[in-house]
Amino acid sequence: MGLFSKIKNIFNKKEEIKESKEVEEIKTYEKGLEKTKKEFVNKLNILGIKYTKINDYFFDELEELLIMSDISVETVMFMIDKLKKRCKEEHIDSFEELKEVIVDELLLLYVDGEVVSSTLNIVPNKLNVLLFVGVNGVGKTTSIAKIATKLVNEGKKVMLIAGDTFRAGAVDQLSIWADRVGCEFYGNDSKDPSSVVYDGLVNAKKDNIDVVLIDTAGRLQNKVNLMKELEKINKVINNLCEGSPEETLLVIDASTGQNGIDQAKSFKEITNITGLILTKMDGTAKGGIVLSIKKDTGIPVKFVGFGESAEDLMSFDIEKYIYGLFKEF
Image 1 (cartoon, helix red, strand yellow):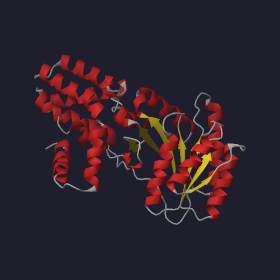
Image 2 (cartoon, rainbow, N blue to C red; image 1 turned 180 degrees about the vertical axis):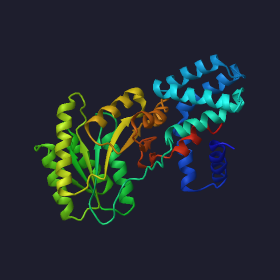
Image 3 (cartoon, rainbow, N blue to C red; image 1 turned 120 degrees about the horizontal axis):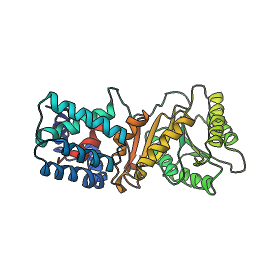
Image 4 (cartoon, rainbow, N blue to C red; image 1 turned 180 degrees about the horizontal axis):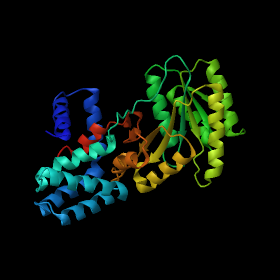
């Protein structure tokens, strides 16, 4: 029995339990991946009807399909080589036999022999700092608000700091979110970002805050300026809170596909990214970015966003993702 069969058996049993948080999460993954499923899994099934027997023409079309699903060319070539090798070694010559191998290899592609955790690194009994980066328009501010909501609901004392003094209205927007979430806020658009972060952290220490979430400017056009700004912010954070930030999270719009992977590579050159947040997954057929981005950048996905509400931003679970995508495969 392959990895996917085992996952399927576990989740099928769980779905028999009508009400549980995990069952709701599984359903959210299924619903949120509908567009990707339509574009990728359905076409994969059609490919299986066309080629009941596996040959080079099948692999050529599978390669094209994987690339069209926004898995990078390099990752696709790696995947195809692995599939061809397994077909040869395990004497697989039909699509029906290959189906589960494809899903297993996609799962292994993400895990890559590591123990991959989507849990935020929150250390008890100290001020934890979460730094958020990403270009404008990807849903960074709303992602901050949604994670703040989760932390507040867990009983943590939270503060939002508006480190984006570049975009007009960014400070006010984050202040409004802080009011809605029910957490503390610090912002001052007349100061430079590192000064705002400094003052905010000083206030957070005084108020015994558990977790601070810091917004930053979303421009990537001038890498040198952004790198200097983030270096300065990181220095301020580390001086006031040794060993922080606990997380530097890059927010990416999943619908941008390969462009999102390019953003991840660019930000990785600028600062130490510890995790990714993929937003707008429900609105795109490019869900393959999840599988490719970890392979291409080495950065794990921490959260995926399937909608507007706080509950729709979920801790990423590769098994639920694979199950949601391939349940009927």
